[in-house]
Length: 104
Image 1 (cartoon, rainbow, N blue to C red):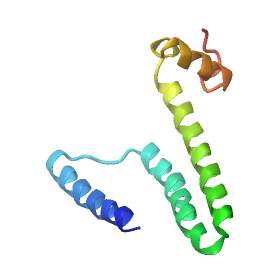
Image 2 (cartoon, helix red, strand yellow; image 1 turned 180 degrees about the horizontal axis):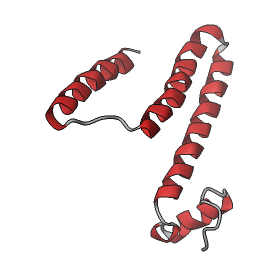
Image 3 (cartoon, helix red, strand yellow; image 1 turned 90 degrees about the horizontal axis):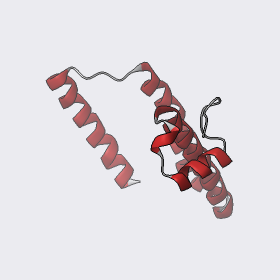
């Protein structure tokens, strides 16, 4: 928890400095992603206080798996399929992570 709190304070400080120096602003897509991810992280933290240990571990595992799949799908939409190594392409196609209409 302290490590997480440290990074929240660090993020606020870095954001303020970068915004002042370069005029950086978060895009609407990044703000929407934060609105999805932050409650997910909070749910995992809070689950340790309200669920039995096994339930909290299962919830954390499931949410981690879903976040990983979402991240992989987003990455596959940004990077052309041909840029991935052959074994990764096979997995991407097997799990249907590439955007529809992508050819091998």
